[in-house]
Length: 385
Image (tube, rainbow, N blue to C red; front, side, top):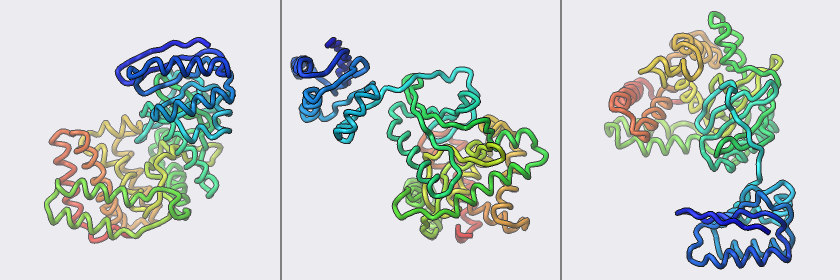
């Protein structure tokens, strides 16, 4: 076995090459023990390991007991299957080796809370995650997609993992699919078909009841926003905000959590939902608040925001939002639409104000969303519709 050691302030990396068996396992263990107190956060790079025996597994077990933060990376599928079969993947951090790809020249599709989606080729899209250690997020999103599919949502399920730079991405097969956003851009004067795809898919999601505890409760997240925002609002407004959110009925019906037209693809006339990492349960108003932000809220101070995000002008975006809300509610009554929009604005402005405060937003932006939230709190007595 060849062993190369690399050290930095935070970790000690052992790059290994060869077989990890009865002969070589003691060599590795001795080399690690010889580091003594200089050893920091042990990482074993298995990129060159093509075989591991039971002796190698026993050494890994002893190392894990001595080094609780032990991580094993770049493990081949064959060696990983041994770790998985013997239960080691449940005891320690073990990462498979994944193929590397470049997104240079790829068409940008959408950007969400946790990553950006690109079309890689005619058959596949790739989601690049912002978090460099996104494997748990990828696995959770795959599970969310699988759960939604089983429950009847027409969703594209990620099937592969890749490395992109120093981070990760997931691959989903979407043959010749196009986003609803592209349909909007192609025919901005007639949004009827785009609205139909968008709203009918949303209503399908909201009609699905999920087993208790299977998905996160979005209302609990919003109650955390209330706790955070209360100190930034006048006392009576903060109290009303809390009463409104607490008054939202608990629900086990599915919501997407980041629903906008970039995340609805159309394939052969059939809509497909993507980007499932924010899947949760909750009342529809929680969903509509986020959707309002995508088309109106985010771009209130800068109209170029929605143009950059969706590639459509702010007027078209606002019109699409209002038409979508009308179809969702099943009415053309402007008073009804205005009322539900105001309820959605409470959620939307809460989210935007919290986002600005947490990211040290400029004073003008913070004051704008605080004022908007304060104004809309005076217009509603319930968020239920």
